[in-house]
Length: 280
Image 1 (cartoon, rainbow, N blue to C red):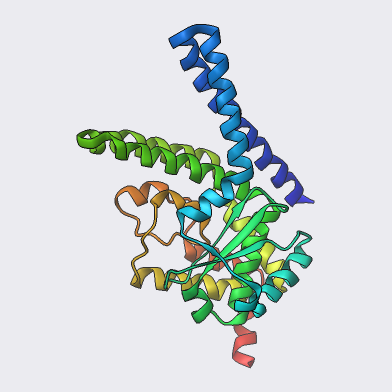
Image 2 (image 1 turned 180 degrees about the horizontal axis):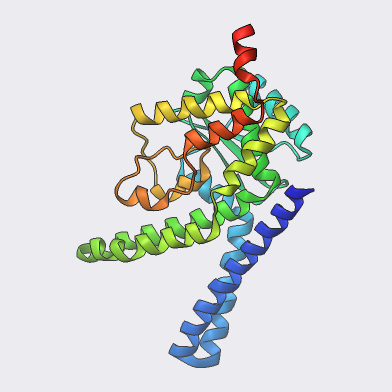
């Protein structure tokens, strides 16, 4: 199946990221202290990579302020996620909630056996069941394809670079000018907008209709134009759509294709949708 090839490619990209990081720190160690320092730095880089693999989802969820959602607080949501996960052929991911009033959803983790989905309280309050199912199916597709592995790694690296600029004191602006584009370049190197189109198609197949997700994307896009969203710009790849205003630093991290194009492609999966709606 095609999604297995996508998952394998994402795992390969994660390994290439680790190899590239080790090569960079190894070169620095060799230049500064020869073989001994190079070995120590590479070993340290491998430890950091291992920790990021096992705990990267917690780091990412901490960045966005997500809290785990108990079963008793939203049994309908848990039931919906469980049913869609069964259709997708993946274990039920952990479910988290964001305090944001803006309707948003995201996925994080390392893959099917270590994935998590977070939804905002604004989304739970505003989205009808069909739209919420479409968004959940979209995020489950990212988990099944292991997009979350690369997304989480890219976000952790980019956020670390952005935060490094904050220790610069009076040099902060200069460091941000250098590290911001570097962080954005890493994100764009690892992530392609095509992953969103693929997850949209997979979500439509899981739900049996593309229209729930199409309506949800339209709702999220309109809400993002009206409500300011505050979070680290480096977390942009995690969300179903880009919730940030495309200006300043946030404009560098846009990895999502235009919502209008995504909706158009989803509607095209059911060419007779206009007639069906008129009949309804």
